[in-house]
View: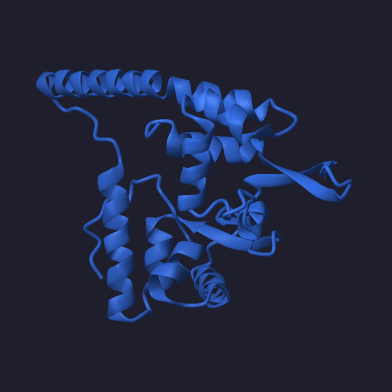
Amino acid sequence: MSNALSTTTNRTMSSLEIASLTGKMHNEVLKDVRRILSEAEIGEGEFSRTYLDKSNRKSPCFDLPFRETNLVISGYSVKHRLAIIDRWQELEEAQPKIPTSFADALRLAADTQEALEAAKLQIEQDKPKVDFALAVRRLDGSCSVGEFAKVIGTGQNKLYRQLREDGFLMINNQPYQSVIDRGLFVVIEQTPYTDSNGKTYPSFKTCITGKGQVVLERKYRKAA
């Protein structure tokens, strides 16, 4: 196995990534790591850590430098070793390169300044959306479709029609259950309606939650 990559890199590869790249179970990789480190008489303490698994429980894993990763996968198939080598190459190429000449330093400074200016421009362009999102997150309740239509600069009827066409609301302007389950809309029961014959009917109002306002603002403000 080639050692063309620099062994001085400070980057590491986790046992989780090794498992993903090789298609092995993570428990199998953990066993491989412990066995190889033990045979090489390398203490595993400095490489061990924990992560939150799918059940939100702390589980063990390893962060291995280049040399130790090579040791662990030395017995793996050529296909699996090649996947690890290619990944290390990506990590190596991703490291920032130190300028070796005055011209390189000037070029790096110019590139950095361009990146900063581009980032600043993007922040300015995104500011209205960010301000809106922050304002919505401070709201304790929801707002009606009509109120929200005013916020994004469109008409209530036009917004209702758009919400029906896009599958948020049913023909009666009430949200689908799946949309309610996503936390985008709520249905508020109002004072019952009584007709001229004295018959009473239930009355409901469709409202957009704070989360829903952020999602819909992103979707409809530009189109409006």
